[in-house]
Length: 335
Image 1 (tube, rainbow, N blue to C red):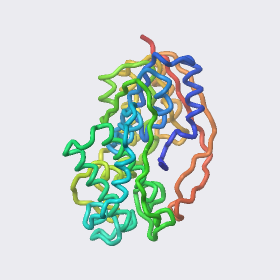
Image 2 (image 1 turned 135 degrees about the vertical axis):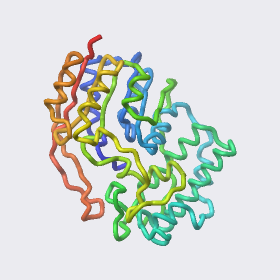
Image 3 (image 1 turned 45 degrees about the horizontal axis):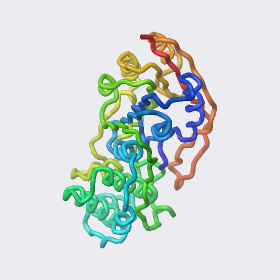
Image 4 (image 1 turned 90 degrees about the horizontal axis):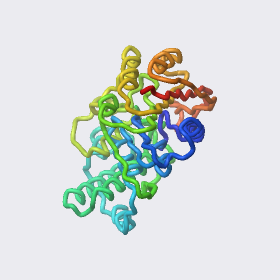
């Protein structure tokens, strides 16, 4: 999934830095990714640690992490469910088609009419199976995460859902097929939460706390509102031209509030090692981060230059490379 702030390309750097400080053997450690997003870092550490705790305020992220992190045992005979879902007779007046496709009353074009109907059809069937207890929780999250991933591949947007494109781009013209969002199988239990990070931090403990909060004022709830709508399967009246839903606003996207919010998180964290990913374009300046973290123990920092890709809204998912610096702030917290 194309995702703002994804650490996929930086994962090797982050893993190397963390293991250089904590140690190579992480098998007895609890790793927490408290701003998990699509769960990239949790997925990387899932096979290396005793336990992963994943959290994010956005519900679509919760769904993805319930699958990628929470699911850890094999689901047998799943292929039959995918086959059935891909061959259902399409419903005509579902929520996505009605509000987010050109043929619907909303006149928006986030998806082709055919794909909008297919998303509605599959989403309704998954929920029906869950309501009737025809599927268990593990399979429910597997199917629902698969739907989010598959829907995103045919979305008619420039990477985020803040707006749709005027004309259907090539990938949006393809007929959506539900493909499995495969997860890693292991024998460790993991936890996944969907709550405010500054509240959750008071209730959990572990060894390694990884922080990847929003860097700027763009709210994830607005940028990915349609994934939340598919995930939640609720009813509301979409607002404005882009069809926004009500969404939670993070204080980490507020220049006046982020410093205090961040320090409160560090202060309350019951973790020995804390690592913060943050780049040179973030709301918190480097000296403020250093000043805050130094209060609570031994501080260090690693950095890497890389090419960050931003969606160009004037073209269909073309991208412009932007050089930036990614900092990994490291804190060994004092007792």
